[in-house]
Image (cartoon, rainbow, N blue to C red; front, side):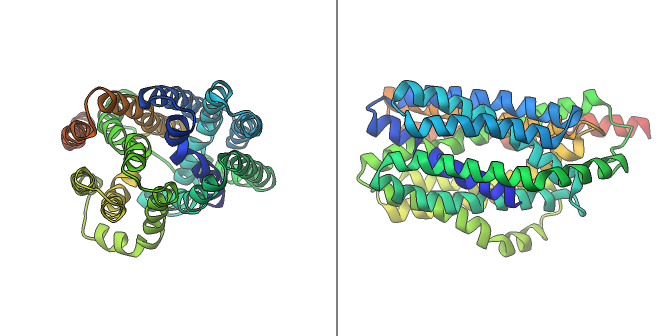
Length: 385
């Protein structure tokens, strides 16, 4: 969990400000900024899949070291060279390197965590957002001084992450191998690879659209807040609110989930809350309204984000946990990849109000995919019994 927090803290210096930097500092269009983020997340997708496969086939430790070295070297160069061309190249390389580490952290949680289930993935999720709270809170104030310092801070945190990995991660990798050999993630032999993977595809199709919607907060909505005069440090404060609520709101979420009996219902409730947050954001004209919308958004994601990797872990046949978590993380990256580009085009060609209506339409689809994703698995299990 400490590794996740350090990793995300470094990334949170940079990712909330990518669109603002390209659009407001370098003078590029929102669509162009969305295209660069598309390449960044495309590289992250490849990194997620590579990292997941290497976790299953080789070693969690070696996978994290390779990914971190790629991201670290890229972030160091980015600290010195961040005009648009090197910025774009190094952002893509960082996406690939950091992407390799994410499925490893998720799969390790699923295989080593003593109690397994939702708690393991919720712990990773909370650690991520503690990093978001720390990074975003610092990032806005640092950027107000100079964007140059943002890139330096990002490189420093990758260096810290790499050092901690070298010192601590190898022993955890050995524990993971011991746990795997004693079948901690033993899956039912009644569920074949094919039916499980089809279920994963259906589940993740809705997850993809949720991330397309969510990514607008990091792209089009971030630029919109600047256009209506909200200062950069206040925009970063929105992400501090997000990360802080996730960390401090865990007792409330634990109480809520004690009344939600299934992961499916957790996604239904969370998705409904996400829709309501965008309705509030649609009418927001000042920081207070955006802060309320962000708070509502946060409670929605607190229910949805841990539920999907938990379901994916339940679906994964033995020995495929890394690939399944890599796939889930790739889908999230796919949403972050296409969301800024699609949102930027809609705002550039029409207006942000139309974008909000499109988002609300997209968020209806996950209700359907969540409802039907496991029908094939249930049918196969019933036939085999």
